Length: 141
Image (spheres, rainbow, N blue to C red):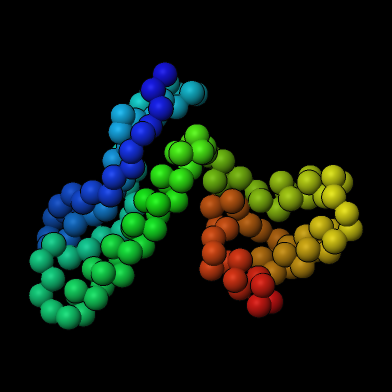
C-alpha cells in the first residue's frame, strides 16, 4: 500500500484563457473502499493564463493564495496520515446529527452550543459546509 508523500499545486489549461488549479499527490493514495489510486484533486479554483491588467493580476494572486492554503492543509493531513478529505460521501454527512450523538459524552455546555449552532444554521449543516468563515460568523452570532 503506498502512502502519499508530496502534495504539489499544479495548473492545467482550460478552453479560453483560464487555468484550473489541481493538487498532484505523489505517489498517490489508495482508497481502501474502491482500491483505486487517487493522484489528483481538482480544486475548482481558476486563474487567468495571461493576466491582461492589474485587476486580473490581483485576482490571480488572491486565487493562488487560496489554492496554496488548501495545498498546505492537504499536506498537513497527509503528514498526519489522515486521508478523509478524499471521502466526498463523508463530507455530505450531517454534522448536526454527529454533534448531537456526541452530546451524551460531554457536559451541558455542549448541549447549549448545539442548540445555538442548530438555530444559527437553521437545523441543517453538513461537514462540507464547516469552514473558517462559518466558524467566525457563528462566533459573532
